[in-house]
Amino acid sequence: MTASAESRHPRRSDATRATILRAARERFAADGYERATIRAIAADAQIDPSMVMRYYGSKEGLFAAAAEFDLRLPDLTGVPPARLGEMLIRHFLARWEGDETLVALLRAASTNPGAAERMRGIFVDQLAAAVAAVGTDPATTARRAGLVASQILGLAFTRYIVRLPPVVDTPAEELVPWIAPTLQRYLTGVPED
Amino acid sequence: MTASAESRHPRRSDATRATILRAARERFAADGYERATIRAIAADAQIDPSMVMRYYGSKEGLFAAAAEFDLRLPDLTGVPPARLGEMLIRHFLARWEGDETLVALLRAASTNPGAAERMRGIFVDQLAAAVAAVGTDPATTARRAGLVASQILGLAFTRYIVRLPPVVDTPAEELVPWIAPTLQRYLTGVPED
DNA sequence: ATTGTGTGTCAACAGGTGTTGGCATACGGT
DNA sequence: ACCGTATGCCAACACCTGTTGACACACAAT
Image (tube, rainbow over all chains, first blue to last red; front, side, top):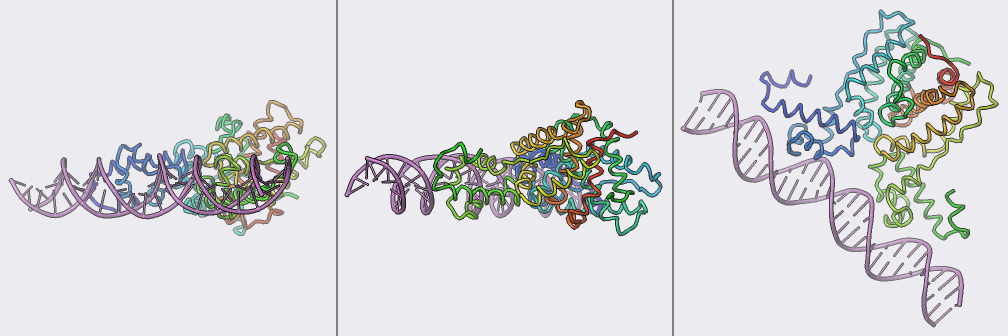
């Protein structure tokens, strides 16, 4: 969606654009929205701040481009019902360690309304769509997605943002058997009394 | 600790100090650390920005005073082991709805290193101390506390910061039977394979 | 009445912010 | 070779930030 419909010929400045985007993602992930200044991002990319404005219009526009993100959730239709939780947590952990975009989005969502809005879109629409494929009562889909999001985002928040030592020090592989049953119950279980 | 050891005589400016602190907590909770400006806080409190500096030294000092927080975790020693999760989630939900300090801390922790540090202190020290009273293997206490923190903070993050509709719309009372078993397992259970 | 100190207001500083317009240069098509 | 355009840098703008110091007033003690 970014490079296909724009022009048939690749632009000479595509490399610059990509460099800016990479630097922006790093800064947004490390510092959050307001502390990540255009000047700092431009310095990282070894380019003039005005170029950022020309190519992305504004700081908001730059963030919007840098925070483009797809959870790439797998189709849960054919998955053995008892393995749903494990599959989900494994997918999220892999998605996080490999792409700092989610960390940038997470940090910015705390203070930037636009980032929060985008986060809602990702974790309500994309996640709810995947949860719907599980096959439980459709009336409960949204709530199940919300509960899953609360555990997933809480893990990310404590691991990558606040960096709670016990959560940071636990290898991803050892996290799975703890978190998987939680997600499993949120996806397919019923509330307890 | 705030008013007892300072002076035997109450100061004439104590009311102003309290007003500043209240306005600061509101702003920090609503806007996060960097967007909550001293000028805006002073305007809310209807006083001059320089008073904030005189009474709290700096913006960091003001935040440190505003983010003073005690989880007030109950002693879990005598609690029936099967009710630990329910008691914990109930306590946290009540603590949150009644005091916006935690929301201020949560939002600020995303971008401000000092706030993150304080959050670590609260959710590692205070929470781990409470978890230790449960009586499971002491070697697992820190990890159990971290897991509990991940779910608790994730719930707060999705409910008060990102404001995911399914999580916001669910009444606290209906959240309990979903979250309680999760905390229960993190506190007393063993990881699954 | 006169100090001295606590309380509050005002104006300003120095630095950083997003953003803009002008100007040089290098490229690609003719 | 030429010309239009894309790419890049520079300087500046208007605004906002935390922070500071000088000055005015009110109160309590002498």
